[in-house]
Length: 349
Image 1 (cartoon, one colour):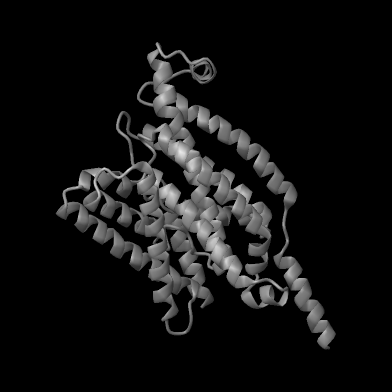
Image 2 (image 1 turned 30 degrees about the vertical axis):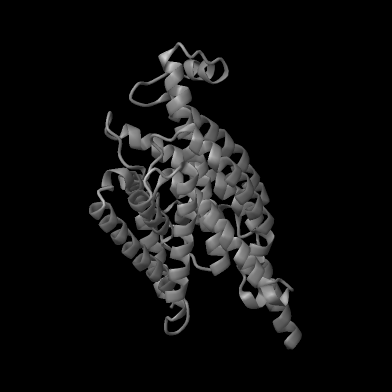
């Protein structure tokens, strides 16, 4: 009887670890192709539409005398690349958070990390004017870490344990509190115009210096995430199972948290508070490829980058020549999805 129970448990674990590598490979291949065309469309369309031939020549045969080439090189290319990188950062961060905490509601925005980063950037503008791009990125990292520490501290005192819904509620409350502090600082020290960009979220006005700063972070953070993928897959089955398989869960969680803070801080320092990508994309990816994080993380990076590139393109086309904040576009997708997940979790309590 005991052996039958053991075999049943092993069978259930195998079912939990089911993955669809063929689907994942198709997503990676066709996702990259779609991302390439999305970037091309993002560079082409704007206040002044530029044909694809001009885009091609501006990229590979740049002529500084042509205004269209200057627009492409100095304004649209860094903006499009920033959207792809930020979307990938937020999606991978959300996937790691959901895997480590086994919380389907976890994401950088829901857990208050993006609000924490924006709060520290507000402090930097108010008390340290003239802070460099690198300085703002450091402040952003610190804010994400502060928010994470507060959320998990509050959640740890919750009666009955740290359930997914309670952790999400703590994150939402902390995010709202830090956003309120940011607004108060902006009004009191007259820096509202400076930090309004971080409130709305978006990649408009991104310069090459920002791309140069986040590319090394992209390489380091994404490589670390890929290296953790197998461990996160095991950890997503539960701490007891992971420990039984000999995994050092504390080390995995610490490194995973550092990766999340690194990627989220970099994303907010460039694009501000863009929400819900880290919530929606990991769920879609798991539905398509299964629960093996060796596939979830790279596929989430591709789909997250593609979503934000398309959202940024849509933000320019909804009400031209004015731009709709990208954060509003992603919220239109993410809020109904969050409510659906919250309702599902409540039924499971």
